[in-house]
Amino acid sequence: MTGGPNTRLSDLFGMAGWSKGELARLVNRQAAAMGHPQLATDTSRVRRWIDMGETPRDPVPRVLAALFTERLGRVVTTEDLGFVRNGRAGRGKGTRAVEHAANPDGLPWAPDRTASVLTEFTGMDLMLNRRGLVGAGAALAAGSALTGAMYDVLHSEPALVTDSSFTTTAAFADPAGYDRYEAAPIGSQEIAALERSVEVFRAWDASRGGGLQRKAVVGQLNEVGGILAYRHPGHIQQRLWGVAANLAVLAGWMSHDVGLEPTAQKYFVIAAHAAREGGDRPRAGEALSRAARQMIHLGRPDEALDLMKLAQSGSGVETLPRTRAMFCTIEAWAQAAMGEGSAMRRKLGEAEQLFVSDRSDVPPPCWMQMFDEADLHGMEALAYRTLAEHEPSAATVAQGHARKALELREGGRQRSKIFDYISMASSCFISDDPEEADRYARLALVSMGETSSHRTWDRLREMYRLTGRYSDHATVGALREELERALPYSPSKRARLSTT
Image (spheres, rainbow, N blue to C red):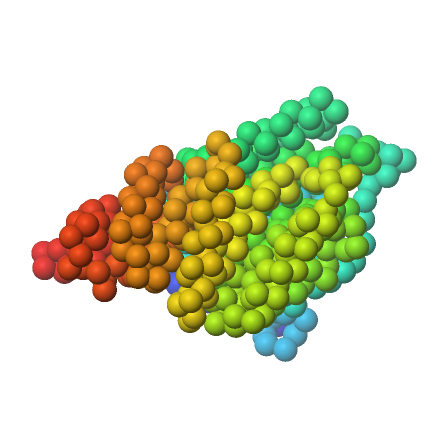
């Protein structure tokens, strides 16, 4: 007992709208369903958890997490409830306990804690998927807050397990995840199969978008979390952390792709922790660069720059030039969104120099193989198209890069090709070429049905805004009507809904 209220639990309790007695009854019922029929919670116990900061014994924190997850329609973990893993509940403001509970992504996690958080979060995510809940009601952390929390993660050494400490005993006895089953240690063949599965999921995401395979990726990540509960020989343990990092990035990117933004951000944080445990600092930096791209997409480029500074500084000297080139393109996009044309051009020039300086004498990691010359031009097109909102003359340069990206795109990258079409069409509208814009816009629209990516619809919606000045143009007028029918929550659909 801490003597102070658990403010995090109190806030979530208020959002849920239960009475204390109602929550007590739900805890008993849920605990019985989870195999703990002996649990007997009453109103006074709930009051002590909320008002006095008392930490209930296991399995109550996990039971509460499951209840709040279902009630609020988004993932709620035990730490979100103010129950930190060393047994302390959240206290009043100013205490270290609440600082940690309010920001559990801060100091580097111990390996068993990383695996535990990973398993719990994916288990709750799977529960939301299974029950058809939305899963998007959490708050997105500010980029600056995330940067402060993650600084030590990227600037500290991992606690890698050595062969001499190998044991098949579970690293933590009580499973944190609601969906977790009894996993077992694995060997080289199993880890190779897991690594191959990552490549299959990555290819599917690039081709079809995040909606169709997100649940499968989260389920695979949950399984890996269970396997990480056991200590393996050092070389296997390191590869397992690599698989966990790759799957977490994919789960985050797919979540971002379908609009589950807070869930996506949490997966990027988990990925950074997992990559650090595997000794792969460049991978940890790349995970944070995904969070930065998410911030730019959501209209928060200044926060994206905070994240990119950390990604650059925390990735280490072993980061390959091509990876640093990719980081530069993301920074350039953020600068373009802020109207900083000179800074954007300098950063893109740096990206081009880094890209050509990569002699490919060191094979790129699997997670960098998607960033090729086509992607470089695609990101440059996006940056210049974004800058064109502030400097219309940049639209012509954007068209050149988009055209080059489309020439270089290989098969299986359908979503990237759609983004190139949209960049091209948007740039043509800005540079007063409606006929060419109409052609590329229709190519994007035709291709949209083959993917399940909300981000593509968001970009198309931005392009739709640019068609307004050409509404009297014959072909563009027809295009606007097609877009209004196709776009989710399009202007015409909102108008129809408001009149019914």
